[in-house]
Image 1 (spheres, rainbow, N blue to C red):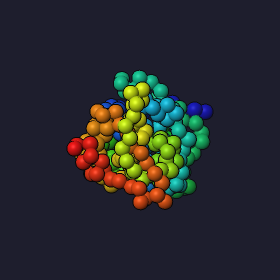
Image 2: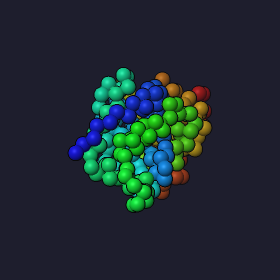
Image 3: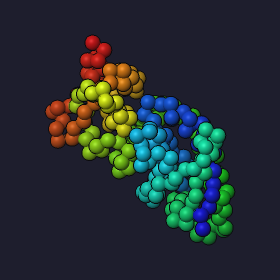
Image 4: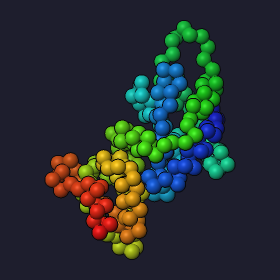
Length: 218
């Protein structure tokens, strides 16, 4: 039987993330022994993942199936339908003692909802993205996830625009300062440019955020 629940405490961080350059929501929260990593990818380009909540369970080292989020988010509606499989996964993550008595799942969901942050410091968010880059690579939410080495800037034809799924890789896969990356993304969009990436075995062709920023600011 599906359980309906409104994760309305996502409201503030969702609104904040929609306005960010990376169009990404990510935070980790704790309930008892459980460690829950929540992620959403909010660009219009994220057609397969938009309005889906990704939950990674640290203790059991498992991704739950993506959870569709329903409702008018601008009005605080983040309705999810929790199936038996997800319910079991979430309970397992808590590492409950088998003789600890009855467990109130709805109360747990309320605790989880109440544990959500109301704002996410930008530097902390980027640190979370970088810490979890191997996990994020599995989700198909970045362009060409196998290419993680920054190569060079690329001018786009007028018929195309730089994609958030490509540009957000600058935050995840480089060690550039957050302020520099933000400025670089703004310049790339201004000049209708994007960045090219290559694989680890071709690192001799690599560039870095400072170098590209210097070229575009020249």
